[in-house]
Amino acid sequence: MIEFKNVSKHFGPTQVLHNIDLNIAQGEVVVIIGPSGSGKSTLLRCINKLEEITSGDLIVDGLKVNDPKVDERLIRQEAGMVFQQFYLFPHLTALENVMFGPLRVRGANKEEAEKLARELLAKVGLAERAHHYPSELSGGQQQRVAIARALAVKPKMMLFDEPTSALDPELRHEVLKVMQDLAEEGMTMV
Image 1 (cartoon, rainbow, N blue to C red):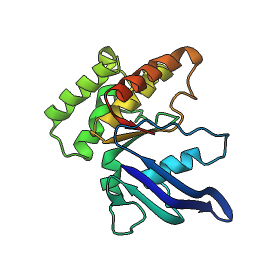
Image 2 (spheres, rainbow, N blue to C red):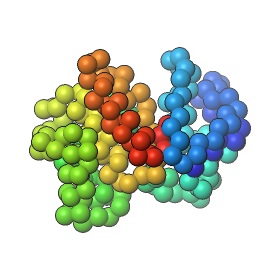
Image 3 (cartoon, rainbow, N blue to C red):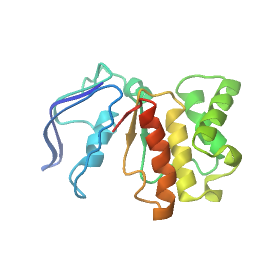
């Protein structure tokens, strides 16, 4: 599903990824551990082409990420990403945030998108918060909305960039429970 072949990434003279060889199979859960500045986020961002690799080959769901002819939207449709800082649209409710992807990325109609968004909010334990804005939600709730939003485009894999690091310790379990459920359902996760 995800294959790194001798992948390197430089930011100017600084090499942050050094000849990475890694295969991640469908349904596999892979955790990347390392100190701050070791390239963990960069590696994730390369998978969905938010960063360009410098050398090597990176293949995601059969698409060669470093091929200039490959439309990054095709990759991003299959790789949902959840960031450390949530990145919810502040002017949209939780429901509208989750509906955004199906409407924009998958071309769903409003009724389909709303039905899916409600199902996903229920899945992450936030059905009763559908009409709340991000500012009205706790950090753990915002991160669960972000997970629901990433799942709404029906990706084949989920990329998590330190999804609990910005949360209070007592809120982390909410997000980890959702991630555990996804792993048990067979979602490919990095």
